[in-house]
Length: 137
Image: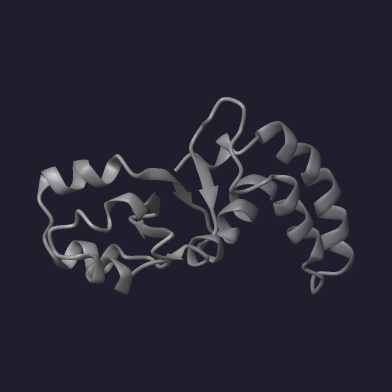
């Protein structure tokens, strides 16, 4: 995953604000939350690069109207595929809004199924620790 595609210039500017605040009070997590907010995770950029989503954002899409899953740290909107799934919609709904990697891999999906899944990719899963470690410190 290319974490630097979020917006490295903006991240570098915010880094200068974050480190002094973290050095004065390491228990205060509000600077990190502010930085994440500034990076606009989950919003498309002008050039429509793949977006990064937190698992909490994925979890909000766990019904028939909006069904997202995570497989191998990629986020997929499978809402339109629910009624086409050969195993039935109920299998997908069991994992809606979650990391479905284990369930997906355990079923031994074919190469065709994996290619079909790629059509529904909307972004990648990002972990807060990845942002802090790779971008800010």
